[in-house]
Image 1 (cartoon, rainbow, N blue to C red):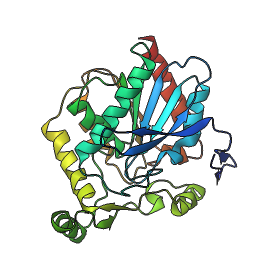
Image 2: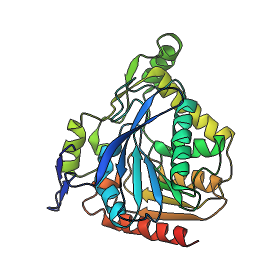
Image 3: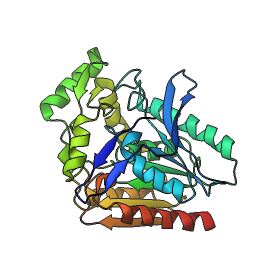
Image 4: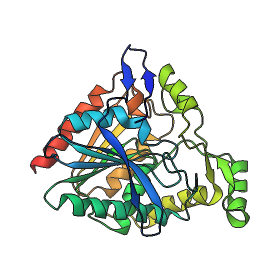
Length: 299
């Protein structure tokens, strides 16, 4: 197991050395091997939570909170997106956004078979991963029993420059696998925590470049979400960071409300930055997530 330390200004130390997880793999129908962190619950789990990450991050950013969910009685699976994190093949690339939707669909279907219909299956989507979560709900509804959205990336404030967009579009036509910078390489966009910023700057698994076709398909996914918007009857918990430099919060709330048919719970944290995990005291949002999960389990 990888051992890594991340210090925080509050004096709290972040350690993954004792996290009860193992790295496992899942082979998609197309032959791509997806790696994920499997956090085993002690005893019979209350529910299974599948997490998906943002465009630059990976499951290693969130090991501390995953451990806390396990301690609360949940089984947690953190899936790294193809070409990201632990997945070294075709780095920063995907044939299309539909491929990413199908990857998640197959993984969730497999997990449903593993746990059965009686155990709740919750999809947790962070940042850009929110687009994949709702995109899959459009493509194939009712695979999960609820959605947990942490600063989802439906309405970003950060974009490539006009010049960069031109070359990305050109590249998608003639050199689709050409790599371009992801416009999120400044750690201050994610957190104000100096120790976490250092971690992000040095993180060898962070995705800093993506192919032209990946970036173009991210835009296509935006259109897909808006053209084929569906109503989601499953409960949704939306967490908003008041100091978010990446996400337009007002537009994001309105966007999620446009999808929500069932229960929608919105929690706003005025002092928090984009990545809740790196807040000096992240316990508050974790406790409120656990409270929301308990309510869903009892229904």
